[in-house]
View 1 (tube, helix red, strand yellow):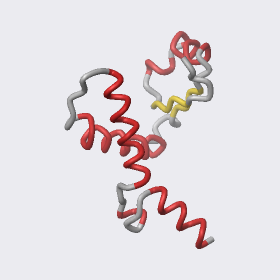
View 2 (view 1 turned 120 degrees about the vertical axis):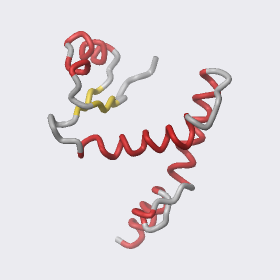
View 3 (view 1 turned 90 degrees about the horizontal axis):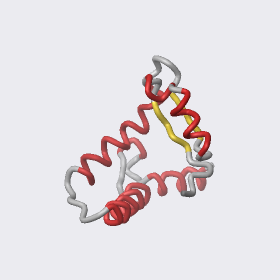
Length: 105
């Protein structure tokens, strides 16, 4: 119900280019962000995150309800941002890395 400012990131797939689909997004104040045609790097960060989300949450859990899924999804996103370390971020979580980068700058 409150999609104002929501950004939907998709690839250049034919289904995302249909006028009816794009109009529906517009009617719900959803911003469509498509990758540049033929540039897989535009999607790589989100595809990596969704791959991790699926392997670390979706495939491991059984959800009792939609509300249960949303609750566990929110918990996972908090964990991902604040506790889950990444080697690319020098062994820090995303929040730790940003905080550290701001202190060093």
